[in-house]
Length: 193
Image (cartoon, rainbow, N blue to C red):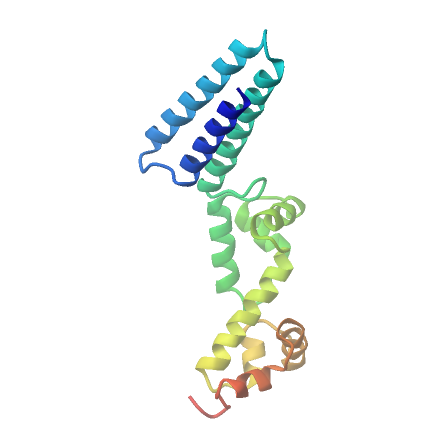
């Protein structure tokens, strides 16, 4: 009996990783699978409690994985921000890198309190809002160093760092070298464009 439950679970998992194109077919298969597992559990409850338990555990894990998969497909990391909030916050950050960006500005964009926003942002994105803003500033600085001949001091100010030393310190921490040497390695020198 245990082998039947294990085979059934493997069959479901292979279909879950390659879901059919139509959502209704996937939902139909899920419902049919769960009904079959629950029927096995009901039949085995009196004569083989371990088989019944195995069937219930499998049904439970299938439900949990389906809930996680569908919540991820809806664009909301488990416990994080909704997709529309992340998109709005990202757009706000990218269009305001040259300014000081406070948590309260970002939380207003996402329509959450600052503390709640900070926790949920980290769950959704994997880094704190501050770390994310710094990373985006460094990415923009890299882009500008590659595509323009502006001096590093101008690039630092244009992406929201207080001065070139601020850019250099965070750049060295992130990339292990100074912005000037990073730029030279890529063949871009100030005055060239």
